Length: 513
Image (cartoon, rainbow, N blue to C red):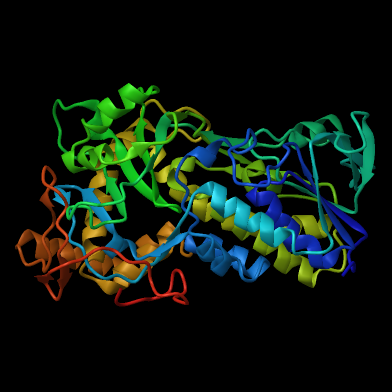
């Protein structure tokens, strides 16, 4: 250890901060993580993680990245109560014309609350002997030697609070990682020190979502065979209740609990318990409301409107300061409704780990090289995040699409998604590639340019037009989701969902449940 310096400092103790700390730990004598909050010993919501009250997808690429930084993380998360499931068998999913057929698929996922995801990672962080977390600390600024024109370098961090009291003081550092999130002031500090303003890209489509926590009943009815229920917005034109435009989930987490979430683009969302339950019963699939009625509410209603996409283009600075990089929302924050944030941060941290392994110094050339490759990584995720949000006329920001493209995206995005989804149920090659896109293992650009994928989508369109598809396109959304498992185009009696056998790797090509 310590071949690149004595001390690295990570600004922020979030998921991004913990991943960054694990990534740099092998290369410095000491890693200090500065956290504003006081972290409770048990899993609790806190000010620094407002999204913890809502469902979180830790996508397979993100979980694998964390596993490479902290070996044993996946197993520890599942041992702590996370649910390892195959969504194609475990989820009752309503899209397009109704409930989709249930069948075995190639993708598995791990379901857990953000609280458990973070608590498990914090336990792994505590096992690394040269990482020290300092809580209750405010980051006040950076100590920079030199300037933008003379090869400036970050030499330390100005802090206040913590065990040493409220006075402002300097913490020396050979390397600094900014993981302070969307509200990071690092770009402002650099500008005051003489660097150009960091260009910012943004797009906010006015997505709002609201969640409430529930305890599942001890005795589930036969109709509740599923672990996860999702209801996509309607594709039907004409007048309909606003709730038919909602994207809705009953999301399973540890402890036999579920998070019930309603989200929309531009609609006002319920904020009180009675309003929430009223909306739940107006969802276009009545089975959604019937399931919620069986559960016991164990929280108030939580609402989030901070869902804009924001990207700071540090890669465009002509001469970035040495010894300073960025991970997570501090450089690129996505609409959290799409579940890309934690995985994007973990992938950036793993990239940093790999770059440091080959480095001889954390100088300006190192920073430029890291930012360049990180830019390529983020480009793919950024394109995917904006694909849907650009379709709304109410969208604001620098990345607003021309009106003709907004209309096209608005009209085509859900039908295109439903067609791809239906194709994956009959074409294993398209399914594999689409799963890779969903899990940020493959770019959406690569997906749409793949000749085999394009041919598969076109061939399914032909089969669908002539009624030759093997599986039904959907079942009546007004009824409960059917539990039958379809194999070779024939339904077989289904059963209750069970977690996958221990040792089955998340995201593996898995057949059978």
